[in-house]
Length: 381
Image 1 (tube, rainbow, N blue to C red):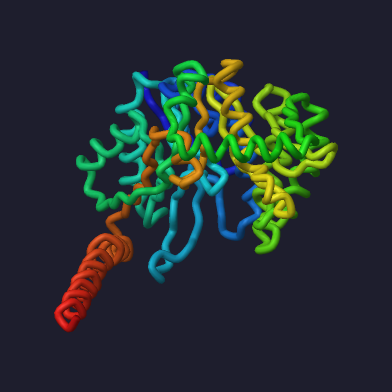
Image 2 (image 1 turned 90 degrees about the horizontal axis):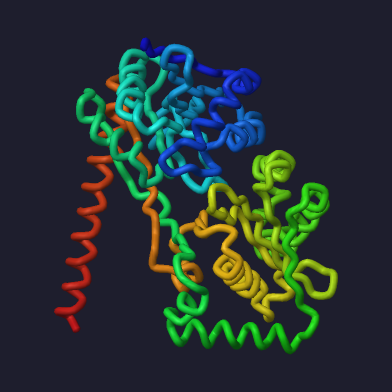
């Protein structure tokens, strides 16, 4: 059957393929909430006010059947001081990861057609940025096929995301952790128990979720992030995303808001999306005035313990970097990458040379100088 590509530049046009896209996302080798059309439409509606951004979703059809979606947006920005035109995956700090949406047996053909399209339209872009690209068969296939095209590209680590998998009973899982960590958690739990007024609430009902949003916005405002204006209400795009996706996701049973309360006052929360047996804690905050009760740690413990005991989902995909507090829980990680593909225009080649040749060499020179300085200091001592 013949293949053809269609470019969607307006979010209203995406509703034409929304249903088929949703089915395609469900059939992916590793289905994810961040591959659904609802995620991307909500994401774009939250971010589309950015000047110079244009939706650029590349869809591949085999005859009239949707077989791949490459969710990009186009923008003009600066790269190491150079003005460039970028095609970027629709990801940001909220996104658990990025990927293409492809039917498995069409993967190689679809990615090859994408690269062929990019090769034939280099007047439209300078750099393709695939940030937070997850460890998938799509990523492996892309890196294999890139060598067939005359593109320079670079690869850098993005997030190293901790993952907790409920593959054993809670008692077995908990017993495998360090004595120090378990003792610390027991002390925190006893401190809360002695307080006597702490409760955990899981909000799942659609109406209750809408009522809970202002609550978590207020907890976020009272967190340490509020002091530096990084709370949800001060991040306009993020705030719009939570409002939009909560409404959509609540109808599908995808959204949970977990609240830790002192009497009736929420002092900590985690905002979760649940999809295909995985839960994605997109954001968590706690009221700074209750820091002495370790509310964030307590709520996290309660959620993870319930994941094991109730078996509603089997994977806690942390959506975070390799932070120490998550290292206490797991030794399982996914390494996300940032892959940058450069066109054959002179400006793009200069940008690649600066980022992947000049700067690494400069860092090596600085490191050598630092080592020499330390050796000289050692001799003088």
